[in-house]
Image 1 (cartoon, one colour):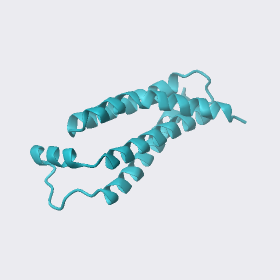
Image 2: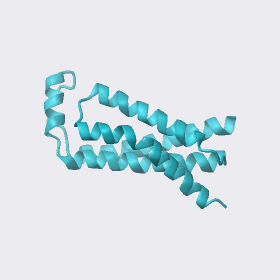
Image 3: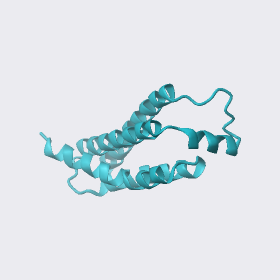
Image 4: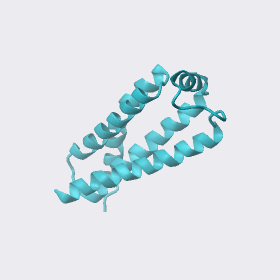
Length: 134
């Protein structure tokens, strides 16, 4: 049981680190306007509405990569063959993205993709790791 918990935690940490790095890259490429007050809901909405599609695609790419990585790492640590752990990982990441969507306005297409991407990508990472097991 401890190995399973550790594998999920390690997967989450790896995914979040990847998300953070890619999103920081995105912030450097597509910076927020100077003086943007994130407590002003109207200003944040206007900012999010003005973001180019590339900014969203970069975040989505980070989510795909990080979630794939999470599933891969979790399988390597747990050595489990059942798909329960990637489903848990994907569920946690989906819930965290839903919270993000609740806190910040996003385009509808991005919300839809953000809700459906995590579980399948965690499963792909999991399967990929099983294929290359030693």
